[in-house]
Image (cartoon, rainbow, N blue to C red; front, side, top):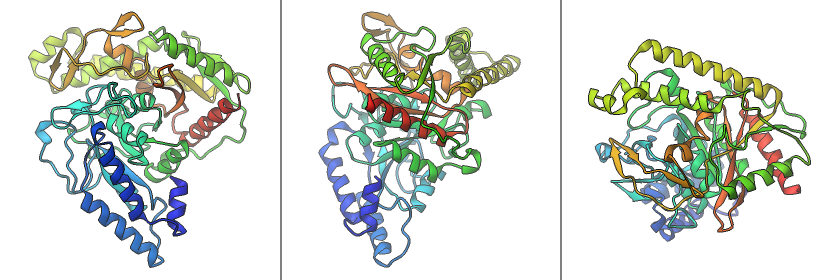
Length: 447
C-alpha cells in the first residue's frame, strides 16, 4: 500500500487508475461474494476528486491511493448498512462512522461494503440478504466470520484493507483462515460508534466489542492505526531492542487443536526460540477456561436484558438477570485482566493459536435462534467438539481482557490452507505490539 501511495504522489499512477483496477478485480472475483455493495459512480468520483487535488498541488492526505472496504455493520454515508439483517435492508446512513470519516479525511477511497453473517452472529459468512462468501482460494471452504467478506476482499486484492469489528474473534478468525493480517486494539483506542443494530448494553461488553483492521501487509496495519486510533489512549513506542521475551500457549488451557496446526505452531515457536527467549505459560498463571466461562456468563447476562422470557428460559442457567451476579462477573473480569497484565509485564508478547483448525468446508446450521446459528458438534481431526469451542475458544480470553492482538500468517497445511497465530500485547501498547510482530516475522524468516 505504501509503494502504491508513493507512486500516486510522484505521478507514476493516478488514483483513478488504481480504482479501475480494483473494480475490475471485484468483477473478476464476483463469485467469491466478498464485497456486497459498491456504488461504482461514487467510487470513480472519489478518485477523480483526489486526482484533481494532486494535479492542483494540494495536499490529498497520507492515505491518498489507498483503497479501503468497510464491514456491513459500520456506517458509511450513502451506502447501505444492513449488518446482514433484513430489518435493515433499506437503511442508508447519512453520515460516516468515526473510523471511516478519519480515513476519508486522509484521502482513502472507500470502495464498498463487505459481507458478514446476520448480526455478526457466526464464524462463517452468510445471510439471507446477500448469501454466502467463499474462501478466496478454496471456494468450497469458509472465509471465516464475522468479518469474513473483508478478509476475502483483502486476500483477493480488491482492497488494501478492510475496517471491521471483533467481539469473539471476528477479525482474528477470518485473518487466520485467509492468510492475511488482522488487528484489534485495546478497548476504546479505536472509536466505536454507528454500529448497525447497536452495541451491547453497558460499558463492559461494549468495551469488548472493538473496531479492527484486516490488511495484506503488517506495515499497512500500523499506518491505518495511526489514522483511525485515538493517540491519546496509546502509549508511544518504547521498544528499542530486537531481542524479544515471548510467552506462548499451545492450546489455551487444553483446548482441542488439529495435529497439523499444532505441528506448525510448535515448529514456529521452535524457530523463534533460536533468536528469542520463548517460554510456555503456566496454566495456573492464567486460567484460560475460567476466563472463557466468565466471558460467556457476561454475554448471556447482557443478552438477558433484551430477550423475552421464553428465550431466557430456553437458555436455562446460562442467562441470569440478577444484577449482583453480573457485577460479580465484572469484578472477576478485572481479575483476569490483572493476571494478563502480570504475564505481559514479564514478557513482550503472548503467542496463541487462533482456532482449533484451519478454514473448514462450509457447513449449515441445524437451526437458528434469532440470528444465532446453532451447529452440530464440530470435528477436530476425528474428535467431536462444540462448534463454538473450536472456533471461539482461543479468541475469547483475549476478548475478555481487552488486550490488543495482531494475527500474522505462519504457514499452511499440506492442502495449502493458511495458518496464523495471535500475537497478544500489553494494553494500550499498540505500537510496541506491532513492532514486536514485525520482529517475530523477521526472526521466523531468518530461520
